Length: 426
Image 1 (tube, helix red, strand yellow):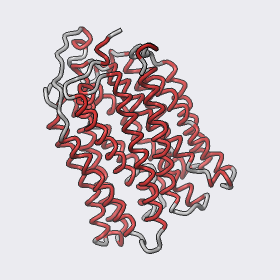
Image 2 (tube, helix red, strand yellow; image 1 turned 90 degrees about the horizontal axis):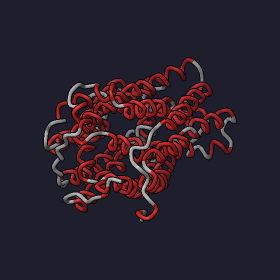
Image 3 (tube, one colour; image 1 turned 120 degrees about the horizontal axis):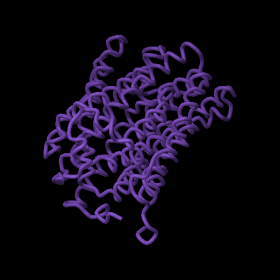
Image 4 (spheres, one colour; image 1 turned 120 degrees about the vertical axis):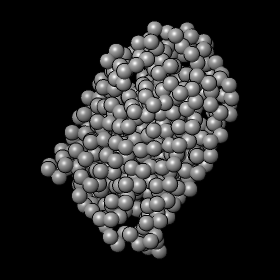
């Protein structure tokens, strides 16, 4: 067994804390501006068009994923990645822009407000996606392989605890008659902007670990060619196939909140309970999948998270067929299942990617992998078209079927590292 998998790196403790603070506060900020609940509900104040509501996830994912292969090629051979990370944080001003526009009264002009909203969303996700290429490479160099699951698990537990408070705050804001629209969303987007501040400070305080020089034949095979890892690395190809299929859960994600409020007649304040359920579940799955990833490897976290993700659209389908009732009252379970998938993204899929990627070309793997996942950016918009052409029954059924197929493909993944021996387990 390679003992270097668990050797501490320079400034390990400092960077461990900095990454946790960044991850936790970033998650809190995104909870206030959740692309799976808060943002679709906000867009739903201006339009009932399913494709436009689905555009929230399309812009969010597309601008974050698609340009990363270009960013990866640009910074792959740069010895220091932190300057590029810091440049990418500039887009966090976007939520302040949205809040200011609402405060100035742009909500009285729906078309203009939606245009500014989607432009601002792109302004946030595009540079953040570029920064993430540098972030993942810095994480891989700063935190040993066997300790990444621990870091991500702790960060998800902390952000999950904070998310309980976020959900409660959202419910209070959205359910209060003293805080009408659009003032309620002015407050929400401002809180998102505030939460990004400590995350940005934590990233600024990171101490970058120098990259290792590697002369392995595997590195040499991937030293050029934008899509060479996809052509030559079978582990990478299998991982991408799994991620795309499981990621089809996003077909229905933007429409759960619309379905709950418009079809099942739940109060708009239920958005807060959705966020709280997602965060509490994220806390639990962060601990569970973090421990599972550390002890059994990331594939175990991938398989469990993917299997639970299937339950989300299935539950929504059952609630729809039952016309609400007690299933409607337990609708937050849909977001519990979504939290399992999201937890497995970092603790499973990305952790596995960082393990199979050679040191010298890790940014290329991360960037190419995320760009390949750009095909998922069309899923929410396609889901909107499918909903308008058919029904919620078809949308939830197709989503569950594709996600289940993706779960089956995870059985074909090969371990990236050996499970931790019993005598080495903490």
